[in-house]
Image (cartoon, rainbow, N blue to C red; front, side, top):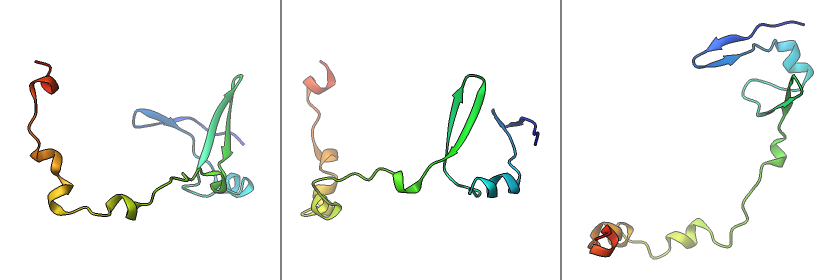
Length: 87
């Protein structure tokens, strides 16, 4: 099957027919990876299972513990020193 590269804003785009998407087990808004090998453009599906999750040693609840309206913007209450201004 042949297609044409068309202008899409400041980029270029190729329309993928529904049959091609179905054959590749893709749908609109599916995440894909783009690679160039030689003079070929390779479009591959990105497995959603491979998305990286951060395993952080703290939770959002822990970060917000003790936060009050007064302490939430404490940086705005601080006085800037001459050293911080580079004087």
